[in-house]
Structure formats: C-alpha cells, structure tokens
Image (cartoon, rainbow, N blue to C red; front, side, top):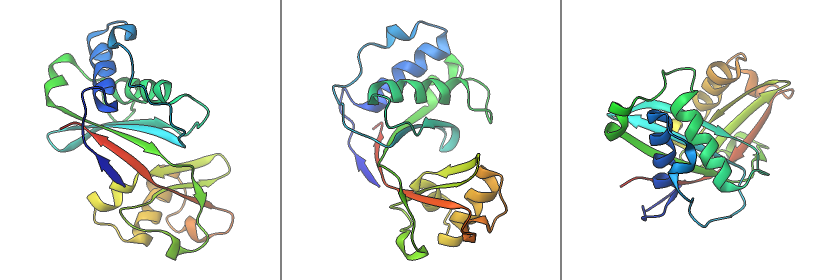
Length: 182
C-alpha cells in the first residue's frame, strides 16, 4: 500500500468536493473537474473517517469505468449510500478525513504465503456472495492472515469464517495506491 502526498488537484480534494455537493444537496457538476489522471485501475474505494473512526467506505471493482467516474461514484456512495451510516451532513464536513484507494487488478491467491499483511487487500467470493477488505483493514485491526481472511468471509461475504479454506471460494489479492488528505 503506497501512500502518496496530497497535491492541490489530487483525488482526495476531488472526492471532498463531491462529498460537499452531496451533503449540501448541490448538483455534482459544482464539484469541478477531476484530476487529469486516466491510469488503469482494478477498482476505487473512498473511505471517510471522522475523529479517527470509520464514517463511510464504498467503491467499485469495475476496471472499465474511467478513473474520474469511479472516484465520483465511490465518493457519492460513501457520503450518501453506505448502509452502515446515515448520509453525511453539512456540519460534519470539516470533521471528515478522506482517503481514496486506487486498486490494482486483483489476482488469485495461490497460497496463504502469497498474502502480505499491509500490502494486499482481499476479495473473497463464492457464487453471488463476495466481500472485500482494503489492505488498511488488517493493519488498523492488527489482524494476522487467517483472521483477515476469516473476518472478510464472515463480516463482508456472509460466508462461514473458514470459507476461504474451501476450494469453492475464490480469494483474490490486490494492492492499492492510497491518497489521503494532508
């Protein structure tokens, strides 16, 4: 997980402008132009923290959506549609810290040794059930490999905690470039 410094036209600034429009009920066109960055990606997530605690996190795994549209969509969803939280209100805006994670193309995990805590995020899927944890989750919660996989199965995919051990369950690994507000 690479953390890159904030620049005036960076992804967190763009995501913040989208979130401000959402919170104020304004037209998203008022957020202005996105950064000029059309890199390929395996998905995008926008994470909101308030006083160091999770306030929202949503994203997309569609690598065919242009990066600016993916960030716009993830920021909108993190602010307004995360089912764990009410929509962001205008009074909360100064208290929010915004993080944009740009995912690499997910690759199948062949062996538990492939997984590197702090470097890899995981996608666990079986049939229509799937769950995802960004690399930051393992570090923030001090999880080892097995706990990281088990919690993703149980908490995100709705599978049994040990479903990752079953060959019917696919585990994919990805890395992220993380852009945080300064």
